[in-house]
Image 1 (cartoon, rainbow over the protein chains, first blue to last red):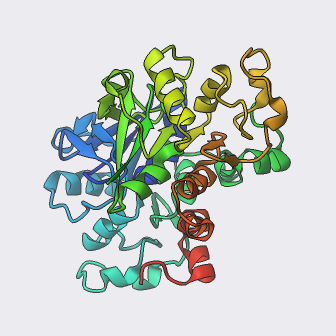
Image 2: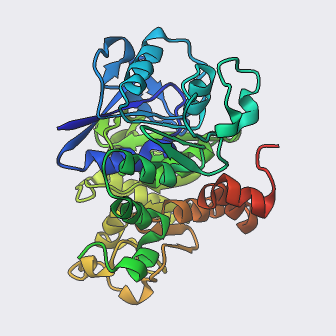
Length: 195
Length: 195
């Protein structure tokens, strides 16, 4: 069984991880776990969420680490820093979206990676963000073991994260196309997904 | 303050309500409340959710009642039936997606409404579903006070629900287009949304 750890801080963005966590948690060989610095957090949409793990208790690496955006990524947390640092330095998959990418930029984690995010001008005074030339103006960017995306890119983020964990380009695109094109558009392109 | 009540049963679909609840809960004059038949439910994606209200405690109507799909809509609940019946019979806004529309079909709530849903053949043996000719093969359908959608239509569902509560066609489309087109597509069409 493989585990994807989703970091959900208070005021996390409901829509950013919704597709990815649902698709993964329905697979036979994957499970989703949630983690935060608090036992309970509330999403932007008002979902009272009890997380599975406290960040301070995490001492392992994961098959996929997902950092979901929201309004609390100005967080100061040695535990969170260490989790991300360990995962990235071992070349293990990390997917970060929206405010979570701001955190990566602030702490120098984007150095050496082609990346995107909400907007690079937000990071102009970050001393550890030295490579604005590696910022690509696309909805989502994948470079080696790191996927980054802006906050309007839930589906592209999902597609790239699925590719990051080993799905083929075609399979990941097809799986996400069900939601991107919708049932009728998907059926026209690929045939009925439910028969 | 207006309230949107989101019914979330166990194994609810994370992505179906994520956009709508986030957009509403960020408005100054709206709040989102969640309700279920259980105090705590888990989403398909693995979000441990503590709801705000038990269905048995609800004795009022809402500015918007949202029924989110998932795997538990074979529910037998007099309370839930009564909440939906009261809201619809008073011509108040109801938005239902995916499995929740199956429930509406089973209980005769779709009669008299043009509607859609996951697939009308699922309802062929429902004695209280008498109007398959009113099923429209579109991602989402709005007819008077009822919006229905299939489970791949989170964005169209959101757009129609926003229109249902009084947003103009243009405003609702524009708000949803940020996620439908993504930041770069939106910027090209409308200008930068964040300046």
